[in-house]
Picture 1 (cartoon, rainbow, N blue to C red):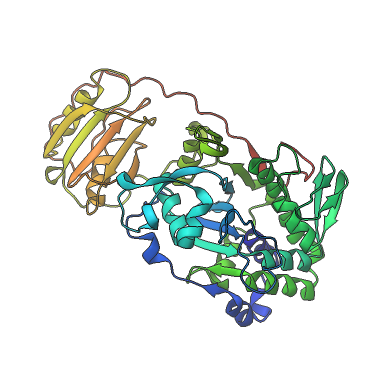
Picture 2 (picture 1 turned 120 degrees about the horizontal axis):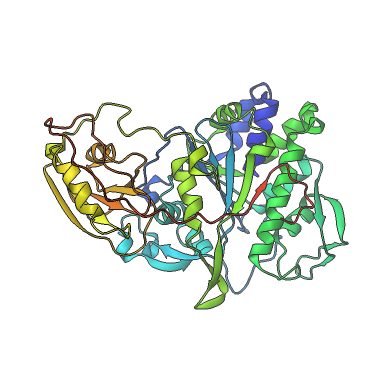
Length: 469
């Protein structure tokens, strides 16, 4: 629902005139930086913004204890998990739904400093139960390489209050719903739901469709589309009392990081004022049945398409040829000379001789030491440049030799910068601060073509709420 807050501020704009001091005071702010730790990803597009939005099933606080609790799994969980990406140029946004039943690596006991080699497999929403939002962010960043700038958590009561403040939200269901657990009864078709009904609708699972959390996610995405459409309509924006009531209800329900107050929300909202609902897309992390438990899921390899799009700031499914060029690693002066950098070049391209060829082209430019080898494990297309703590600037110099390279922080490399050459890797080019004048050697070896990117299903926010796509 925090998406709706930003949407309202973007179009309405006048939150400052509506007792902003009180609205900002409504928000509970909690610093979880210690729980996240310092080993965090970097962003290729520094001005892009990633916000983790969590719907908590907490039963604490007035209005929440009236919602039934599962006796088999007590405690607070991240019932709904949305990662919102606002593009650097603010012309589009992606909203990624992460299934709550995902089984992924996670830090043991939510430790903020445990290396990934010690991580254990755990159900996604249990990260929140064990270590709160800080543990959830650390787990997300560690599995995706996507940096989280801000977070917001909303509870049951806040969800209901916001829906009521909107005057209800329209939903569309293909089949009748008769849910014994929540008492929700709806005939097939379109309905306008008030707060309590709306909460039951987005949470109902077992009595609708195949009873899975994945089906529920589709309903939640359609619901959020309807909220965004309603929140940005003139029916709300030109009724000051209703607008203030919505923002008051929304802010009273939010827990955020200390830097994500109403002022920051308003600034972000202003920056996406012209984005248009058609440029907001919903997407679900591709998944499959978890072999050890058919009631859980694991992410498919194609999920990397989503994470790469967020890291590199381009739309999901956008062809590489149409993307805006990424900022060059050498856009600002390179501060580490090649003769101060040790490089390890690994070949994951499937083409023999590529690593040696690249190493020769680096050596002639004065890099201190260039070793070669073959990569093992998962393979990414293109060039991946990895570095450990203290070597970020050295990695920039190395990445300047590989146009379009992805630069990522990793563990255990010491002072060595590791380059992995995957399918589609380009030839080495001269770095701006190279040493010597000897020309680069010929590079006749060409990497294999990258594998076709899988297409990920997306849903634009302006799509009809009755759409089942």
